[in-house]
Each structure stands twice: as C-alpha cells, then as structure tokens.
Image (cartoon, rainbow, N blue to C red; front, top):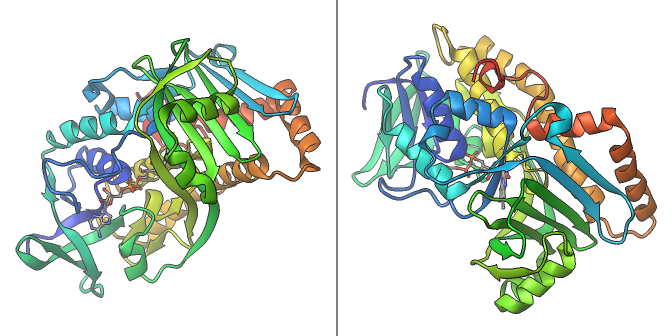
Length: 402
Ligand SMILES: Cc1cc2nc3c(=O)[nH]c(=O)nc-3n(C[C@H](O)[C@H](O)[C@H](O)COP(=O)(O)OP(=O)(O)OC[C@H]3O[C@@H](n4cnc5c(N)ncnc54)[C@H](O)[C@@H]3O)c2cc1C
C-alpha cells in the first residue's frame, strides 16, 4: 500500500480533473485514478460542444485552465429559443444584463487538452493511470481503502475521503450501496460541427420540434456546433444519412436563421438517460458530477453543475483537519441541495415540456415562451440558470474572485 492520501478522486473526466486542480491550491495530498492510459484522452473529451456558463468561465479562469486553451472559444452573446409551428419565441441578450456574454462554447477535446496541461503543473497530485477502480473496503481508523487494478495487477490505496467522479455508471456509487433513480428519455442526441452561409455571430439557437430539440451553438472556429435530438428508434437511420440528406434534415429543423447549411463533420450519437443518486455522501465518500446526477444535456447544465459540486467541496475542505469528517460532508450535501434540485428541475422540465408532441400542449407551450419573452423576472430566472449563478454559488465562480 502507498502513502495514504487526504483525498482520492476516482475518475479523471471533466469534473474529477477540475477538482484535482482546485484542491492543489489547498496543499492536500490528492490521488487521481483514471482508467485511460497516460498519453490518451478519456473518451468523454470528444467533439461534443460544451456551453460553459459565465460562472464556469470565471472559475476555470481563476484555476488557470482557460489560459491553457489553445483553440478559440465562442462567446454566447444572445440566446434565441423557438418552437417549430409555434408563434412564441424567447430572445435573451447578454447586453441587456450588462454583460458581454452569457458564457462560452468550448469543444470537449480542447478542454481535455487544457485540463491535461494544467494537471501536469500540479505539485501535490499523484496520478494512477491506467488504473480501474475495483472495490471499496470498510473504513478502518479514519481511512477508506480502495482497491484498484493497474498493469501490475490489483493494489490498495487509502484516503481520508474518496470522491466518486467516475461518471453516469459510477462503480464507486454502487460499491457504496447508494441507489440511483433512472429515467430513459428514449432520445438520442446527434452531435456534429457544421458550416453555414453565415458564420457564428455570438447567437445560440435552440429550436424545439415534436421529435426533439435542435441547437446551433456558436463555436470559436467559424463552425456551428449542432446538437440534434431524435427518438431512439430513428437514431440509426438518421446517423446513417449521407451528408446532403443530414444537412437537409437539420435545415428543416433549424430553419434558415443562419442561411444554408453547407457542410458537416462526423456525427457522434449519445443516448440520453437521467440518473440521479439518492444521496450525495456516505462514510468518508462523496459523489460529484455525473456520478451524483446525470441530466439531459438540453439545458447545457451537466458539467456546469458538476463543477459547482467540485468547487463547493474544495471550499469545504479548505483548512479542514480531516478531509473525510462526517460533519463536513453533511455541510457539503446541504450546500449543494438548492442548486442541484433547481438545475435538475430546470433541465428535466425543459426536456419534457419541449419534446411532448401532445397537440393540446402546444398553445400552452407557446404561451410559456411568449410569457418568458415578456416577463423580465422569468427571463432573469432563465438567465441566472444559464450563467450558473444559482443558489449558494462557490466563491471562485463569482466575478470579483476570477
Ligand atoms: C452531447 C452532450 C452535450 C453536452 N453538453 C454540455 C454542455 O453544453 N454544458 C455542460 O455543462 N454539460 C454538457 N454535457 C454534460 C457533460 O458532458 C457532463 O456533465 C460531464 O462529462 C460530467 O463529467 P464527469 O467528470 O462527472 O463524468 P465523465 O466526464 O463521464 O468522466 C468520468 C471519468 O471517469 C473515468 N472512469 C469511469 N469508470 C472508472 C473506473 N472504474 N476506474 C477509473 N476511472 C473510471 C472515465 O474514464 C472518465 O474519464 C453534455 C453531455 C452530452 C452527452
């Protein structure tokens, strides 16, 4: 067994890697277990387009990650939401809120490279990769023992606190005996980058159709990031369309707001499920990010929420004598409650409201969109969520700190 860690993070994806960076400032001895070998990026750092809320941009700037991005990001200055066949629409303009942008579009692959560059600079971090989490043993003398498997076989690590950042199918969550509520949206999201007559100008378009949502996000590389939701039974057929038919389908869904769609890159497909853990903490263990809650990507909230999990935990750990102290973990769970509940309700509500084809709902949905366009308080709610300033916001997310 190696030297015990203060904190052992299982999963070096978006949230686990961000937490390791945030903890390094505290001088804690941190271990990071990741199944993907050194020199390769975990699969999650793919071509998906991530909308970073303003709060996320603030925090990643303060943590030195934004400065490591080598590719340009795409500012989101305006958000345009509409529904096919309805008269209502919502237009949100960052300038109306005294801001330059609501957030930034970052390609997950570029973000992975930036995180990796920042991780390489950390002084208190021990990395175990490729290493897979296998099992947890009982807590003995204030330490959790974790069994991992690497190229040399099975070995044991110990820590005052084990963090499950191992994603939707979290094995750590299972080993802790924490149940999760699951819902299959029966929807698949197809993601690609496309070219259009008009280059991105800072507007993000969300368009809701009976068979699912479609979004065009303004990337920083003159392409639009497209996210196209289809019913599961249609997903294979849509994924197999040739480029011309695929572009035609997108055009039908998104309309002509950015002119003609002229070219598309490769498509990736993501079946969409919601997985929500029954609780966030156990004895000397905590769940973060997708391991704690995997939500519909429609509201672009998943990583933004997971980062706030990580930063809140880092705040609780600052100055703590014992990183796995039960009162500290209880305080953490308490602090995450409001943001988590509201973000889950927001994303799930948006997904259900906008994908239910029941004809009777249509006028209500239009009214909803018109109401949002007209009422500043509702707009403020949407914008507050989009920018990530919801509930008990970690200090690094706030402007004055970044
Ligand atoms: C199409 C799509 C678009 C999205 N767009 C947005 C967006 O615009 N904005 C936003 O905020 N969010 C978005 N999300 C959500 C975002 O991708 C997730 O919230 C985020 O990836 C969660 O990060 P995580 O670190 O919790 O989990 P993951 O990123 O899944 O990382 C888990 C890590 O754990 C490792 N791992 C798993 N099991 C083990 C094991 N046994 N041992 C060791 N390591 C293990 C994996 O290799 C991986 O590196 C989107 C998601 C999708 C699918």
